[in-house]
Amino acid sequence: MAGFFRRRTRHERPAFQLYGASVAAARDPYLYATLGVPDTLDGRFDAVVLHVFLIIRRLNAGVDAGSALAQAVFDAMFLDMDINLREMGVGDMSVGRRNRAMWEAFHGRSAAYTTVWDDSPGLEAAFARNFWRGDEPPAGSAAAMVRLAMAQAACLAQQELTTLRSGSAHFLSAEEAAR
Image (cartoon, one colour):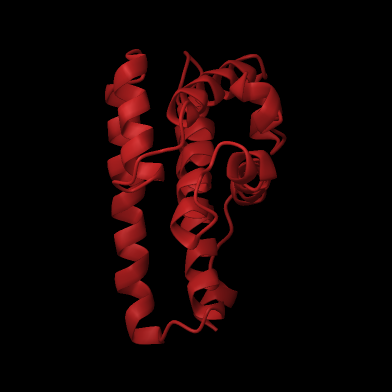
């Protein structure tokens, strides 16, 4: 009931639309079938994190940064995570703790990706560590994820901030981006 009285912000709708575009990109079967991203809850979480990270990175870039919208995209992601945990049957007493762990994982990955963004071997290592959680990634997959991230970032950089602020974002297909 408390959510009923929550004041909506002007960023809420576009934030959920941008988050939805990120989730759609993260669901591309090429990531799982060809690049070998684990088709697990953790693997899918990491794919969503990468695409949301790219949207937030784009929104915060440039002179006319969209930091309020970037925060709203983050909020949309974790509201959705909360709902998904509840739908999966996680008890009310555990949802907050699990959501907090995912929040921390998002921030950790974002910091790691930002730190090594201009260092392909470093970014490849960060992707291998996060996507494959200590397992050896399939040959060439971590490097393909670096190409994918760079291509998606370039694609987003070509999109006007006004377009993104309206809630519209376009991602390349994973196959095209990973070439």
